[in-house]
Image (cartoon, rainbow, N blue to C red):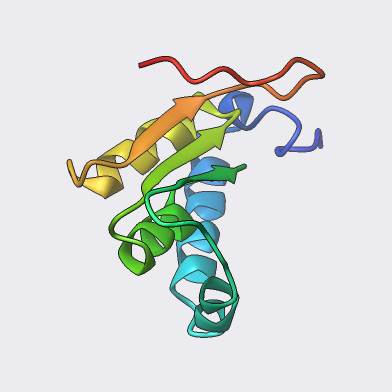
Length: 108
């Protein structure tokens, strides 16, 4: 069986749903609170969640830092679309982005 994480978008729908559920479960785990509390971000800064998956952690970061801009970057189009759906118009930014050696330029 090929590795479903190598190309999530090519995985069967059932596998994508299993992964998405696991990502959301991990994001809801109370053990994430100390991790978020340990973040130190300048006021009004941009927080980038690289490999944001379905956006569960990204949403928690946005809740923890309401005066900051939060951007979730995810190589999977399926997960990026799911993150946008779960964010429900709360102003978070999600983009599909393939990792590489190039630098990231934010586009407004």
